[in-house]
Length: 379
Ligand SMILES: Cc1cc2nc3c(=O)[nH]c(=O)nc-3n(C[C@H](O)[C@H](O)[C@H](O)COP(=O)(O)OP(=O)(O)OC[C@H]3O[C@@H](n4cnc5c(N)ncnc54)[C@H](O)[C@@H]3O)c2cc1C
Image (cartoon, rainbow, N blue to C red; front, side):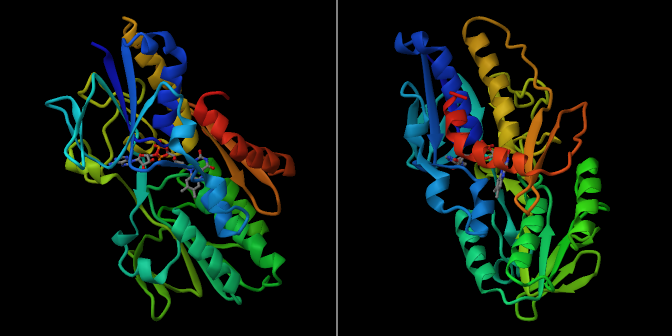
């Protein structure tokens, strides 16, 4: 009987692992010895980094979406549907319609979701750009904005470690270009500096000062009053706003909670090197779904996919699966004014942001377009 590898989640991580398996185990799959199945709740693959650009009308939903079937290798099976639970006792994923999809190896790549409901009033009083719908609403609000104070408030954990800083720099630029230079931009962050990665915090602090962006630290959003347009922090500070943009704290997906696979935030305890779920030899976890103390980013999922796919191929062919993940992350950072920089880091080496340049901005735009090749395993 074929060995069954099931990828739960067909976003960045799940798709990349599946395509690497299909490309490298073609003969075994064709011979019926290996079966690779992706389960994804939607037929559409979404490239989320475009949401940032959608907020400024620099991208439209068309840019961010492709049919998942077209991104997957033809030897990978695709099950479209909402998975209800992982049944570890029977080594199967249970679908919403009751069907069971059995696995020998399971790869969990279900991602994460913003949880604006954890801040009362935020859904009514604030904007976001972490989903297509919210990014488009924010785009419309920015087009109607007549000036005043824009507050960007950040909750942790959240995916894409640098998107809040990128948005803040881009919105400053956007205001300046529309003759709204006198409008204020205020960025708030929950801990005692501007970013969880210290070198990024130092870099952000200096560029914010240069670009006339205000900031507050130790600001954990507790409530939003949509009528009065005031956001209040756990620390007791109240800040009035004309436009509020939030990057709410995130959670792992509900299926993780329903299957009792994670902690209170639905994050799965994962071995930082092998990427196996703690206590589960045949379950791997990658991307946003892990509880690892590293950035939740597409690039993280990409580098982790190389490790998970490599170990699965090795084990399916009789090896022990000894490739180790070193915590590698790479993120471009849009800096406004058609410039960008980047950070690269791992478990041992901290990031060192460089001076922004137009060339790096062009690299980021080019990478966005080439993402589809990367997901397909061609790049
Ligand atoms: C605005 C924004 C900007 C970003 N910019 C960058 C950037 O510049 N660089 C970068 O590296 N990262 C960026 N990211 C982060 C990046 O998109 C995520 O970290 C990455 O997508 C995580 O990959 P993943 O495979 O873990 O999860 P996802 O890509 O989110 O995939 C998870 C998949 O699982 C599916 N799923 C979940 N639950 C179920 C279920 N119960 N049943 C079936 N299917 C399910 C989902 O539908 C989804 O397709 C950005 C994100 C946002 C929102």
